[in-house]
Length: 71
Figure 1 (cartoon, rainbow, N blue to C red):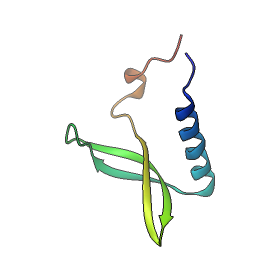
Figure 2: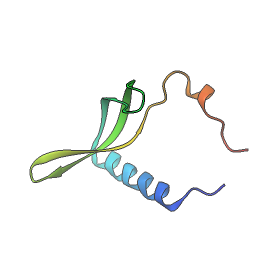
Figure 3: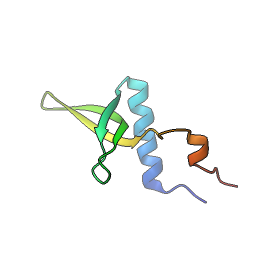
Figure 4: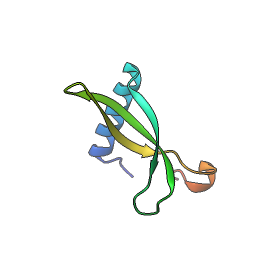
């Protein structure tokens, strides 16, 4: 299964933010469930204000139980 271009582009942006030290881990509330999520964000600036761009949340519990790698 090929990784879609948009996912690759987001990953490249995430790598650049990491190299620049522009990553943050934010505690957020998931809209659909109301649950607390810990969200990995790239940090930018816009007119002197911080802009947080969410990329995804950390897996709750044991991620080895939540995901199956490709075969």
